[in-house]
Amino acid sequence: MTTARWNAPVLACFALAALVMSGTAHADGDSAAGKKVFRKCVACHTVQVDKHRIGPSLAGIAGRTAGTTEGFKFSDAMKAFGADGKVWDDATLDAYLADPKGVVKGTKMAFAGLKDAQDRADVIAYLKAANGE
Image (cartoon, rainbow, N blue to C red; front, top):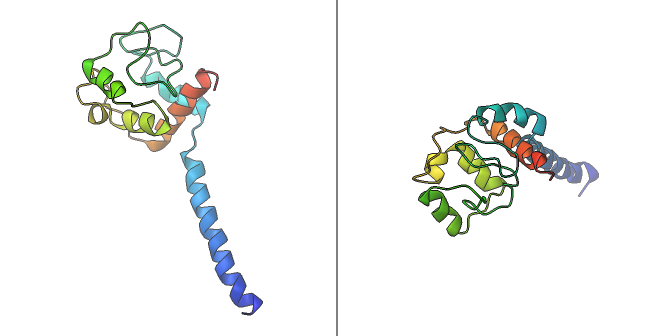
């Protein structure tokens, strides 16, 4: 195989890898932007430990089992969601922020969700940063 014939497939692979990696980078959140998006949430939530409002404090939410924040009375639906082993990782947070009532049927959360994927990624980054991660 000549060098020219060998280089074309290699270059195509590198181009494809760059395209895939750029899509992944887009999914990364910006915590500063997330803090601005989180303004939609502050009527019901805080990121202060043990400071609950209508909704629970979201301090330390990343990695926590759903429905288990100390001192907050969760709906039976959210408790069941957590009892089923659901943990608030990036994927679960993203799905829930997109469609709370679709992910946890019977949740008390009245928020319709964040439809923009970048907004969700940014809020997740903010929640992690606000918790010292």
